[in-house]
Image (cartoon, rainbow, N blue to C red):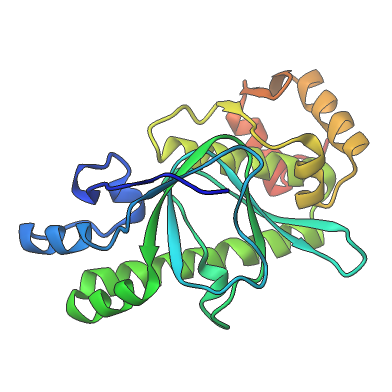
Length: 239
């Protein structure tokens, strides 16, 4: 499906500090503005890129939520992550010059297109851009390691609580409430990502609601006791 392409200036974007370097002078800011090769609108359910596609660009999410998935040989889908506004996606393609996963919009979304060759060239000219790219890649490595540890050792309550705490922190960094969450992913997607069955997700939510830690209305999650939720996430809560 053809996407709409619009021009945008990074210097005027309210997500600038999340996805682009800070502390640039005027001349450098104008150069960074030239990095973005327009915007694309991605409809809910549409794929931004697929496994095996040539890697050409990174994408900065302006609005919406995406999931990244890998398809196993038997056709099973494995959710590998969820990404929201202000985050960069497409890093999976850097190593082999082709994407290693699918990226699917969970709601109508918009992304800025950043050609990677141009970003590499600019990284050599502006150290702050190079440093920022390294920070983005490092952040993804840390996040992947955290997920591996979570899935390897944590119980169901710990996994779900840790996800809610992390999602709230990411929302807060964008100026939203850390305790009022609207989940754009289905419980099936969430369970797939956390390695839990849907029944376990529902049962765990019921338990957390019963303890007064959360209130739940459909996909709306209200964190009533953040300290208690953090304790559950860390494994410090023995209940």
